[in-house]
Length: 423
Image: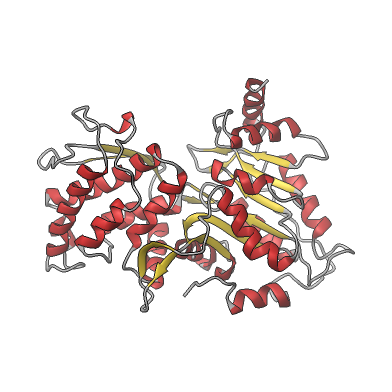
């Protein structure tokens, strides 16, 4: 997100033989815990699970219903790929030479200046060339000094150098500048290129370590400033983001309830495939979904399984229209029909939320998107359907200060105000 996903033999057997847990018909319905679900959403999801699940007279184990979930900010609070980037930077957990780092940070980035909000501290506009030179210069120093790369100093020792502060701040700044300036097709794969040189197992271990660390962190804004002592060509830059990734108990129980009722559960994410495999399947993190049930960003690998700075040929990016294309290629082609439940939160999920006629419910985690965007309009539609027995879209609120779902109708009221702005 070795995974060469022409459905693996294991995944194919899950699809064809129906051997996933919960596939056999049982005599008792599996109840979805109430948790912090909005009451209407909980009722709609529960009714759908029971109506289509393995207690239904029409249920067929060889033709099970299936659900597709986005991961970041849908299945969890915040973004695992972004959190991993921060941890990777702090720990200097890279597998690249300085030349490979130069290639990775520049990959497919236009020479045009970044958006105005990404000027340096001196108010000067920046582009990829200046910031990449600074990143590579600092990484070259770190690479030759840090024992975890090609040097002999401890992490604590190299952290005292301004090169450490400049490197981590400018890479994290570059991630924001690319995402805030260029389209998703450019920005979404970029962060995955920083995994170049690592193996699947190294990425999965890095993911597990990232989650454990994030769960100890408060939910708060974090700011990094590059050091004044080492301005480089780009000058001093600053970057801020929200820290404190959280797992979502309601989503964990929804995954479990669906599987227990004979549904198949898939993840389709714009994060890297090995990252999502780890967090979604590791029992420690509570989702317990098979690693083979992940569709996500793919990069090429060399003969030793090391990740390359190249998007995997013949694969779609799993964002926007690419999510729909990927679901059609790997799931619809095998099941013979589309997903009955799709869950997402962002513009990158909007296409899959509207492209499948078999959809019974589209679950949208409400992040108060701009009403003029496609996901904003879909959220407004969900708000207008709230309380209707035939509602297709369900708008689920979330408290971003606590990283928890909102059990009341607070977010629905916000969504209705969005709907009013569209009239």
